Image (cartoon, rainbow, N blue to C red; front, top):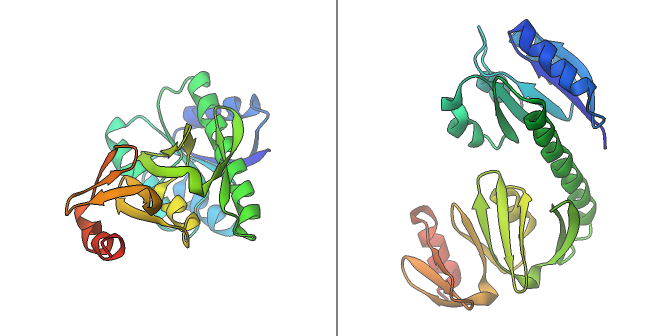
Length: 234
């Protein structure tokens, strides 16, 4: 799969470095580069792209400001010299966060992540029309078929999730929010900002935690407590 990408950075040298990296990656096709964020925003609002390499600190309109104006943003990889914005960035479900100076190896790793995630979205879009009782995930450079009935719980790990099954565990690039929507209609419940559980494997329930059949204790988040008690305490 070839991803169309755009580079936005107010530093000419930073743009040239990323242009060079893109030119040496067969998975990328450069659509445009922008030194001025307002011009970039105008282009992004009018054109569909797959991947955005975006600086954060820029005059007049920063990277966060650009994202806030995009109703359906593409996959985003921040390219910045500021490590202190990482937490805020990951709250926006970005794909990766690259700190300048960016090495070619780190850049390639981020692109591999983008390709993997893009392939996963395509597969899940195809499967969503038939509402199957399984999902396809990319992990360890392989595609795995995961049956919902075999999932005990799912754990959020920043931009990744860890899917705990009866006989295996898989780490894949996805969000808990996205999986929560994918699992709607099946016996799965979001019980914490970092956990989704399968009710079929619940052993016991208290006000603050859930114990699963495999002995794992899952905390119940405060904001989820009322809904969890109503749904699982019946």
